Figure 1 (cartoon, rainbow, N blue to C red):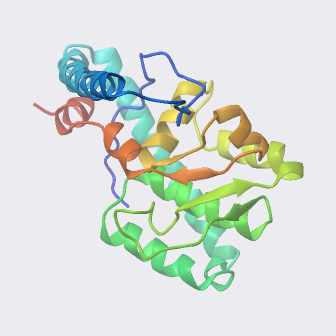
Figure 2 (figure 1 turned 45 degrees about the vertical axis):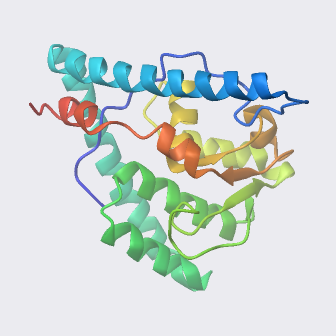
Amino acid sequence: GTTGEEEEEEDEEEDSEDDHPKRKGSSGKRKAGAAAGGKSRKRARAEEAGRSGLHVRERPDMQKKARDGQEHWLCQVKAIRKMWTDRREWEAQERYQAQVETCAAMQIKSQHECLLRTLQMSATDGLIVPLPFRDCGPESFLGWTGFRVVMDKAQEFRSRIDALFPAPLKENTLHTSFRRAGLVPDKWSSGWLGLTAFKYSNDKRVAYAPTPAAAAAARGGA
């Protein structure tokens, strides 16, 4: 994994309960309006990310917050690597070792490595059921196409995920982490309860990827 983490920031926009809203009926005008709206939102997000990067450079307190976030995830990933090794997790599923090796080769950030290993251990412990694995590529999160939370283990799984993050944990911070991994349910509340699956969306992952400028600024770069 890498030693660099971008600032742990919450989404400033309203965190919608629906991440894959259902669309009932559509006309050509509605589709055109939706496409235009999507482009506008993407432009707005890009512009906001640029302003965010500048904002961080001008705020020493935010740079400190970013450094604290880096330290948190470096400590977390060391602890989770040790736990994963002590459990001999690579013996639980033949794909797990390859996923971790891909994670290292791609220099995936520590937060996502923590999430990957936690999902693997949670599947081994029967807290979640993975959807069919794929080779690591653009159509999966390091081989994960999704997972479903086991209903009677929902609280245990949520507690395990919450424990990854520094306290106090905001819901938007948690959701943004999963969006950046591309793993999202139709509705967050249903997903955490095991009523609907978390499924991989490359579009969602790309949409929530931090810009290089904002990441560099969070690390105190120019």
